[in-house]
Amino acid sequence: MFHDRLFFSVMVIVPIFITLATGYALRHEKYDSIPIAFVDLDKSQYSMLLIQRVSAAEGLNVISADAGRAGAMMRNGQIEAAFTIKAGFMDAIKSGDIEGIIDSAVSPSSFSAGYVHEVVAGVAMRLIADHTAARIVDEDYRKLGKTSDADPGVTSASDEALMAEVAGYTDSLWKQGPLMTIQYVELNGTQATQASAQAAGGKTVPAAAAASTGLIVVFIMFYMLFSSGWLIDERMNGTLKRLIAGPGALSGSFVGNMGALALSGIFQITLFSVAIRLGFGVQLFPGPLSYLIFGLYLLSVISISMFLSAMLRTSSQLQSAAPVIALMSGFAGGCFWNFAEMPKGISEIALATPQGWVMKAINALILNSSDAAAVILPCIILAMISLILMPLSYIIIKARVTG
View 1 (tube, rainbow, N blue to C red):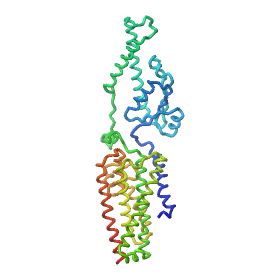
View 2: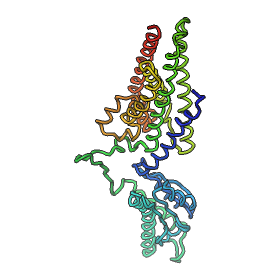
View 3: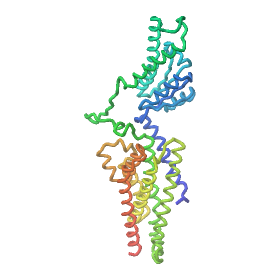
């Protein structure tokens, strides 16, 4: 099987290129979070506090970068917006001269610029309001003669402590809860439903991850179906009839060839997963349970390929059937689109295929890598396919050879 290096390379390289194209085409799908960048030119306590509080906001992925990197990320479509905190940011907030203390640049394709600007402005206003309140109290204390300074232009340590106390009290009022909340719903026909991102705990399956998983699932079946043609060739040239003469030789050949298919399939998956991780930063295996799912799927596909080879009479029949079966079951199983976003009726059709079960399990693990309950039924279904078709394929092969 490895002797045909060109075919094996196609089974790995083609899905990588399709993953790249699909990821680009689906780059505007909704994300778990909105990526933005901060360029901190002030490097002060307040600028770091601003970035920290924005980072804690739900739905944002904050990246600290220099001006060059932020610009490159903007041009490459990796971030929605870039914010530059100017030098003197902390002093400007303390003095109240806040005009133009933060610059922003927004991607032309951004759908979330307004939301992001409001979040950043809200955090900045929290800092500004704290010090505005402190200055007002300080001015009133000075008018009442309650300050320790004879010179109004000089601020003593006690005055600093008073202003810090007022700012701290003002800031504590923000912790009681936001003044405004956003209710997010999606329209399904004429019915408003809770957004899928909220239903999944604020997470959705990223387009690149879903596309990568679906493509390797399809190409595993492609490779296994084409590679199982040895069974038809050995039956046609009489090799299997000669093997039947030796005790246990036919079963040994059957198991050995299945092992070879499994090893080549593992090698295919490994190369693909390493390539997309190094090239695109996509993790194919979201947790230890995903290895079990891919292993059971590989065995089920090997069983299907062996069954087809046992049933079909010529290699040309297998070569004609393989792409049709792989593509049709791949489309039905949700390998070419985001399975997690499929309507309920279509997702039920997808579960009539092994691809549908593995996609269901992997997408559940992407959302929660330790969700064992979500993979129990897919594991059972995939294992049953192997336990039924493996022995059945051997029985058919033996019957044809001895018949």
